[in-house]
Length: 364
Image (cartoon, rainbow, N blue to C red):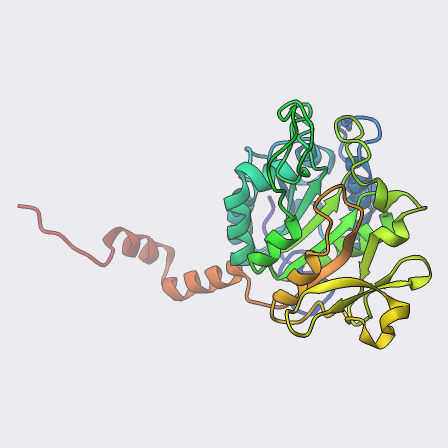
């Protein structure tokens, strides 16, 4: 990976994408082709991963980041082939450990824009502990969790997001596990940016990815992604034009939460319990609807909205940015701490101080 070269334009706080402050920008305009590798894309026909890859390659040039300063780290799973297909630095790492490895990259290299590509199995099963800790630390990186609610790479076992009763090769009589709601999990860890989008909605997907890149700290984006081989139709209700209006609850900051055909449905919040529920707008009136606030400091507001997600066959789900708040990034704080500890001494002085340490022993 190249260091920050002399004369290279660098993003400053408040300029362009604040999440990428300190990352060198390309001096020449980039195109999608610049972020397309020479590797053959090998996903099953109809896989939602193709749509996410296309959107990613299309929006990356808009950020203006040099390929040499873009790092993509993945774990294990179908989605984790992603780094092969983007012409940048990257690592196809080990199962569940992508967030831990990416934390090291982000902390060591301020000049790198770090992206984590993971799946519902990789991130929420063996990688669950790593995920919650990177979220609570607020490391400056962007996590894209492809959620197809199944283990695809290992041929169709149930995953941590599969619904109760799911019949698979590993649950022939139906799953007994209560599934994770990835957005609720992220908000429970107090992640500073949490969003959800859909692989087939290119416009919405791109807008969410841009907002995630604009965030300084950990950005967590759940992407509903269809697996046509082992879990086809898992998101039919929210993708079918005949049902999507009543199934998708769009979240727009500053706007009343309203959806359904002709906006007939809305979301209200119980002033006593704080719980959200779906109502008929004609019965309660527009003024009674909850107004979405993605910037409220307390994560309980966004968490409450996430609970509107149907944990069964997904007949209804909120889509959009649930939470986007500012907080110190772990890697920024770590670099400040190191600079304070090192002071202004020479490299030789620093090395000697490390060797000497603060404690001494006398050996007789």
